Image 1 (tube, one colour):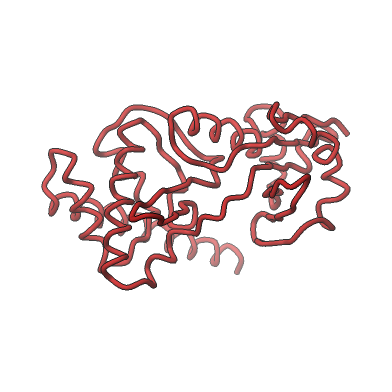
Image 2 (cartoon, helix red, strand yellow; image 1 turned 45 degrees about the vertical axis):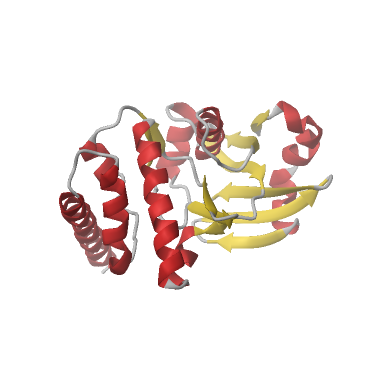
Length: 248
């Protein structure tokens, strides 16, 4: 088995630990997420780490990641570094490990520092006054991302974390393997919001704040946002129906 390992210089002491992840991952730390991927949290040398194991990769993609395209763990590390360089918060990238066997990608891990920030969707259960404040902050944060040419392809309320302290809200981006960096345009920015499932009672608040810093009217922004989101939802439904029919 061939290993591709890269570790942030600040965390060089973790080299042996990361190198042994293929053998130890299932038995270390606490499992905090299990789905398409597996995520564990563990404390090493007084540093709390998050380890993401990329699983459920198709045979075709295993070949692609070994020959043509960078694996998700690699892209997570690179994109996180870019975000930090541009002044946006994301958990400190520690390193990544890709394992290759017989010419295809096998196990793949991305390691970052743990953050105590909470997922944005928790805001939707708060009282309306506080929810509105945080969503307005989120709209300004989102526009700032877009104005800086940063487009997170999985920009949803689970991949944005927030922390509210001293009447100020900070946001942290996670799951950064799918991103692109380019130039701001209104259309590309709206398309980037198609997965951002803000409840209907807060959509107008978000659109109002987002539009304040642009030349668009808030009602036009709200209409365009709803249009993009509804189109994406219809696509998801059609895709699900197609998959179910294929299984039958």
